[in-house]
Structure formats: structure tokens, C-alpha cells
Image 1 (tube, helix red, strand yellow):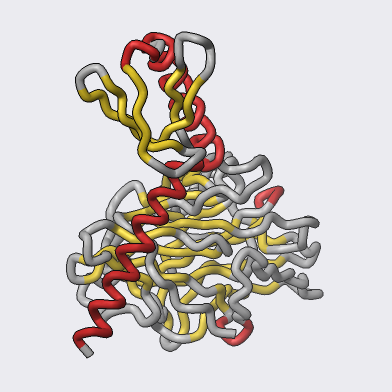
Image 2 (cartoon, rainbow, N blue to C red):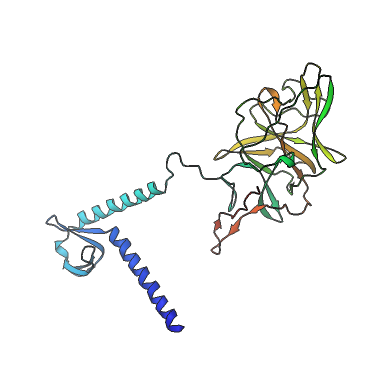
Length: 327
């Protein structure tokens, strides 16, 4: 057993030496002589009036008189060659045109996935975590990432009042932070669907209802109202003409690009504990009836399927191993 370990160690050492020699032979330097010729070398050293070098052509140690070497030309060539190699390495590491951009890092060692979706950056017991939000109605959730669902609303023949309701009194995802950041990367609508209209921007907000987000923001946050076993996103009033008006409790947010197609959505002020939803704002003051729901509860237990960063043994942050989406 001991002899076997010794043999394996010797083989490993030999392979390392051979690898180093091969690498050096692929990137030799030159000793340029005064007569215009040169020697390709992997390394050299000056000993008195002699220059000892390892030939990259003959794989052996050789010597020549020091006075035969054109030292200024040798130094200039090797510096220019080294600069050229560094430039080649830099170009090789640069992304090619058309390559997908690198997923953004939202916390040390914690990256957004390259498949898109809607995520909240949470913090549980001092550990940053990414938690994916699902579109509701949860029974129709297909975990399609960027391919989100959109729904139409059919006006009734008579004037009526309806509500956009989500089943259950509590979301499966709870933020332990009162002012979390949300990251959104979903496909845009190819065609304009018929959906519920949001309040007009120039219309004063009624009672304590906050006005809809600014037009340039595609997504907003709504505080939901609990009623028995449902959560109400908004009230709909459908007139006989089919015109739909809607009220929501909008939360004031800021929106900014996060890179690689992602958008960062952040509440301006801390959210009070309760239930909320991220709403997609469509064209002409309309909203998508399918929303991404979440709650705010600092005392909630850990979110299932949360993604956390993992650190390597050297202490450097590595990409986390993310669980696959359920199908």
C-alpha cells in the first residue's frame, strides 16, 4: 500500500513537471544574438561570462558566451512578446458578440438564474436568499420562467361589481425583510390583451387608495386586502358599456435595470406586515389579472426552496447550486 502511494506521488509529480515544461515550450522566449540569429529558450541564466539556457528546440541545457547575445534586442523582443500573449489571453476571456450576458450577482456568491422569472431577495437568519415568486392562480402555475400568463376579463351584460381574488389568506412566500428587493425578467406581451384597467394617472386617488405607478414602470406592487379565505387584489366595476374601472392600493416603488435583462423593483418605504402582489402593467392603463403574490412577515419560518450562496473551502464565493424548477 505504501509503495503504491509512493508510485502515485511520483507519477503526479512527473506529470506536473511535464505539464510545466510543455507550457514553457509552447511560449518560449528568445536569446537574440549579435549576428542576427536567435536561440528559442524556455529559461536562461547568466553565470559570469557565460549564458546557460534550456533550448526549446532540443530540450537540453546549453551554454554560449555572454558577449554573443544582443541584450537590448533580446529584452525588447521578450517584452513585446509577453504583452502580445497577455492581450491574446484577455481577448480569449472576453465574451463573443451574441453571447448571453453574465447573470447579475445580487449578494456575495448569490446570482440570478439565466432562465428569467420573478424573485425576491430575502434574508433569513442573517443569510441572503433568493426566493422565486409564482404567478397566481397557483393551480395554473407552470413554472415557465419568462413565459408568463396573461388573462382577459369579459364584461358582463349588466353593470356589476367584481373583485380580483387570490385563494388563501396567506402567500406561500413570506419576506422576512420589510423593504425587500424584487428582480423581474419576463417576456413582454406580443399582443395587447383585454385586461382590467388601472386608475387613470390624472385622476385623483379615492380615499386612501394610492395612484397607479408611473407609466414607464412596467411592474408595480399592490397591497392586498384580506377577506375570509381570500386576498383581494382590487375591486372591479364593469358598466353596461363594458368599460372596466379598477382600484388598488399601490405601493410607491423605484425601478432600475439590474443587467442581463433583469429589472430591480424596490419599495420606497418599508412595507407593513401583510399580503402583497406584484402586478404587470400593460398598455393603455390595463393590468394583467395574473399576479405574483408574497407576504411580509419578519417572524415567518424559512421559505421552502430558497436559494442561498455556498462558499468554497478557500473562502471565495462560488456560484450556488440551484434546485431545479418543479414541472
